[in-house]
Amino acid sequence: MREVPDPGMRYLLAIGWLLAAVPALAQEVKGLDLSAPPKPKDAGESTELPPIDLSKPAEPAKPAAKPAAAADAKAEAPAPVLPFSEKDVALGDKVKAVQRKGFLKRGRFEVTPVFSLTVNDAFYQKYGGGLRLAYNIHDSFAIAVRGITYRKPEFSNPRSWQPAPIRTDAAREGKIAFGSQLLASQIYDQLMLDGIWSPVYGKVSVLNKHIVHFDLYLAAGFGVVWTATTEPPRNEKPPLATDLGGGVRFYPKDWLAFDVGLMATLYPDRPQASLPATVQKVFAANIGVSFFFPTSFEYVHP
Image (tube, rainbow, N blue to C red; front, top):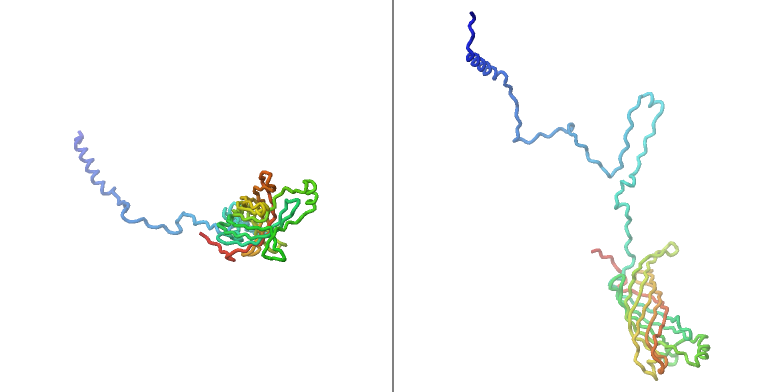
């Protein structure tokens, strides 16, 4: 009979065969070297796209190649290069720059000779002149002192200044209607302290050749007036007054301006001593020429 090996011997033989096969089955595997930095890839192997240059218009895509027979039959015209569309234009390029002001008054003095003419007296028209001195705290605001007189010097005595009202045709009819009495206050002089505000500034073209700058202004203030009741024989105190008006100024030069305006002066007065005081209203049209000092200005950027 054939002799059967012992099971223990079988296990020992199997373990021996495995130990003998391990060196043959083992292969050398290279591990990762974490101590060295990764090697850069070649330019040809990079998958990153180049940056887009937005300063130039995009080039049109080239048409795919066609067969030689079709290309010889009909030649295609090159596609035109279109400019940027409105979507490609930045917002800053769409917004137009606002031009700076062409005339600056801040920190400058203003001397204005003024000619004045009343416009609301139906019986006696009065005309006169004066001077306005102003300092511009800002381009849109100034403080001014204005003095106006409605007197004129006498030819025989130039030092003597007398009222010079112009009698209208309505004065004779008024004296007949009111029994030779015209209950109206006669203003002779006024001295006012005004604040001048210029909220509107603009430009106008003259004959399509010259551009003249202008502004609209409002003026208001207070002061004193001298009237017929402050002269002998009444000799009353000069009443307090307030004024309100406005106008427009044109600036043809850096140092020159033309002024046209209308001022209303209100003050209490008693044309007749036996009557109570009433509010007198004098509306005067003013025409002036302003001279600015310094004669030039500079733009100062903060």
